[in-house]
Length: 462
Image (cartoon, rainbow, N blue to C red; front, side, top):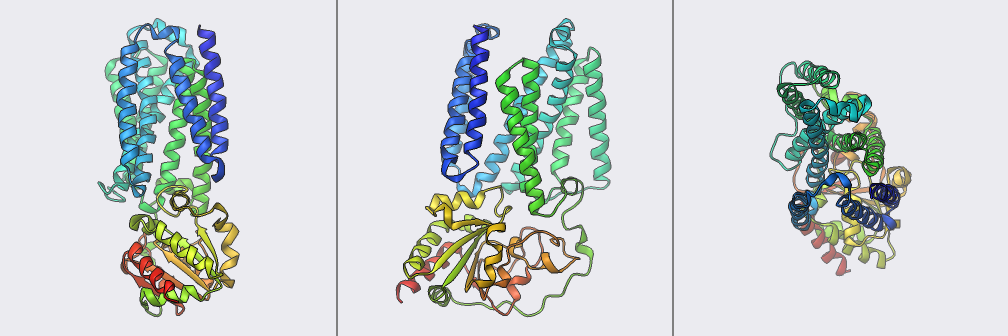
């Protein structure tokens, strides 16, 4: 029976990989999620027939009922604007689960040293490393969730923070070596996990809002690696393959996100975003000039080419459906409309793509930065709704700006720019946006959904 279970695990692992591959394209992403979900169900059912379960079916069913029930209710009730924090906390649960598995195995070895010979020295080392990484991913993701959910400040600092973090992780590593090479006491194990959890939390505390997508992706990679390592400890092929795939994908995504912000991962982790804010930055010339929604709608209606740049503000206002309604009206009038998506728009990778897909926007109208950035200079009107830092031109011109070097959308090169915004505040990074002060930019103040509704009404009168 064990051989059959392992064969099923291998088949489900392959299905995970195929599902992840299908998730890489919008037209197949939904089926890819279904494939991965079916594979998870099959792997879970197969586990009931594993010889080492030894009749613990009630505990397994209870765990599935509690975890599945909470996830089902949470998934159905969560708002689209809250998706980033839900992903952060669920990702943390994966790391926590891997750390819990490691804790159980390490406690068993501590109580019966003979078991260490059964696991083998390599498995023991991997178990300790998986425990460390999983604990860091868990506590770090909890802090990320708290920040995204508004329960904690975006960034928290204290004196000698990096040195204290270094001391904590060094102590955790030393205890890990002790655990892997000796018969550890309960106090040693407890202190090891406390330090690992503390490091994960302190690692995430100084991360500012602008860097949050990167750190979430990094913790996702950590979770995958922890699961893969615990898969070696349990000799579980499904966990090894699935964890490795998630870890590799998360690592690649982290690199891509950091590149999109022109930030080294080491700077994200160990340097405050905007550390150059104390420098004298380029003085802003001009002033913000407002325009009524009805006039903005008329300007859009008579444009031949329009680019719409969505951001997190659109998600907060739940304006994506109204935006698509307006786009349909413009398209009927012969206007060429495209959507420009920055890689770090929103609070998680692909956030804007999900919102637009929910509203029914066709995939071929949604273009990323590299595909559309050269089209702005031939665009009549660029409509920015809820986006800020990703269209700030100082990223291209001011070496003293914290955003300098970050690839941004060239909205400033359009003939006209309309910005839908609640107020005159700065972006998520705290950097003032020079785009709002340009002569050809007009600010349309108000709630995104309400403003777009008024623009739609004015277009319909033409």
